Image 1 (cartoon, protein in one colour):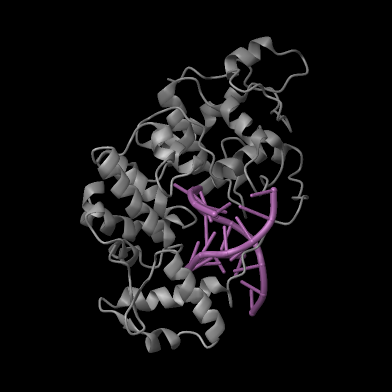
Image 2 (cartoon, rainbow, N blue to C red; image 1 turned 90 degrees about the vertical axis):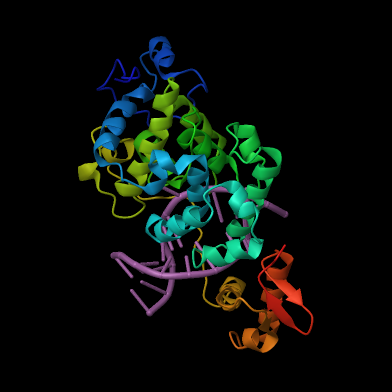
Length: 330
DNA sequence: TATTCGTGGCT
DNA sequence: TAGCCAAGAAT
């Protein structure tokens, strides 16, 4: 049993409250609160954790044998890429490079190649660089400390918290796009969170974090899973939501998002598309690729050149003598 | 703070 | 069909 069940289970949710004192703790806040205060945020924990017990997906990086390295690899791959597309690449990656040192011993270009079509191939380069850093600085073990995690290439606020929480069971606010959406709806009463993570969201996440460490870690995974499976961006399934009876957004009639439009990502015709086509050619070939093979993938020579220069500048492509190119050996 | 950075499935 | 969206990080 968890120790975070709220004393006031049927009070109204904390609509639009971003004023929760950070670190006050759910139970302490409930005791000190006056008649007009927001509801104890801990009332969210019980339903979400119980739901997670029943509906959590059996994902390979959640199994004990995944270890911290497996969790870390999955987090890199899942940055902006759907689970279903990550699964096969994850399995191959871990089979080939079961420890950070195994990946560190390879050329970075091999990481880019194995990354396949997951997208954002700089992540592959950063994962390789992180493996090198782990091997050199941490004896080959994924560090447990949040500060050391976030110092690694490709690991930011979210991933550091996720690895510390999922791999090591620590207590950190884990704010990904799923959790932010769940909080926006259930606690704040709006359809979507802001475009960029705000200080108010961090305060809210901290205020909602269960006190007990292992419960906090479970809460992080559970709230994320709820956003991924039920409280989705489109076509949310409130009928299956354990928070439906207390969701601020739903209780207020699910008002449409007002603020600025969520920035769309155009792709067709962009440098990103050209980069993708160029890199796809290089991934397919173990041997260096002649310039002509790259020229064939895009008509606009100006844009093509700019994209290739960008890939070289990013370290994703290595230029050779005679106008030939390959994935980086070092 | 606002942009840039891939890819593919879904509506 | 043309967006919209998916476990963000770096600059």
